[in-house]
Amino acid sequence: NCPVNAILMRYGNAAQKKQWLTPLAQGDMLGVFCLTEPHVGSDASSLRTTAVKEGDAYVINGVKQFITSGKNGHAAVVIAVTDKGAGKKGMSAFMVPTSAPGYVVARLEDKLGQHSSDTAQINFDNCRIPADNLIGAEGEGYKIALGALEGGRIGIAAQSVGMARSAFEFALGYAKERQSFGTAIFNHQAVGFRLADCATRLEAARQLIWHAATLRDAGLPCLKEAAMAKLFASEMAEEVCSAAIQTLGGYGYVSDFPVERIYRDVRVCQIYEGTSDVQKIIIQRAL
Image (tube, rainbow, N blue to C red):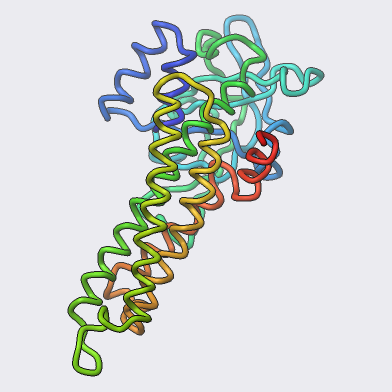
């Protein structure tokens, strides 16, 4: 929902905000962000999905991959090529209702984690939408997509911290109750220091997120800060969840306890909205 809302808030016209943003913000609709394609992950400038203007409509054709809420969502922002010879400046953004003819859910992915959220491959087969569904102007799609990802990365960082904190708190509670060698395992330095490291890394990630979010709320550039927050928080989260499993021992590895699920859920945070490698490229370029 967040990338779609952010795009409409910044680039949508009054009619689009009334039609789409209001129900999205109220929770009556679920947004879908369609950028990634089967052959295009990190290189968003190489899209093949096209949108051809025909009279008072655009006709969209192509395939989008790994689309969150692609099946259960209601309103999709689709980034497509409108001018094949213009490179990044030939991409445009469109609002597409998922009920539109030609919006086809081709496949649902069987994932390691995050099973409560569907991830789909979407085929656009002569999907015709009104020309009024163009967001901003033609040629602004790449800029619109990158702007949404900047804010989205802060959100993924926060998601990472939330999941890691849940696993940490469960492990901490377990460590203070579980007895070994006549005392709670928390009192054994190996376990206590492990959890101390987790608490420190969680707090460091939170501060990176607050800093990036403060800049974005103020309308200031935060591309580097958002990338730093996502990079650190997502990698920290996997490490903290792994430490939580280790603290529970065998119980951490079975589904009777939540930490194994959280570990599976958090792993994708290093992948979507830009991989860790992409975040490092962004940070490097900003130095």
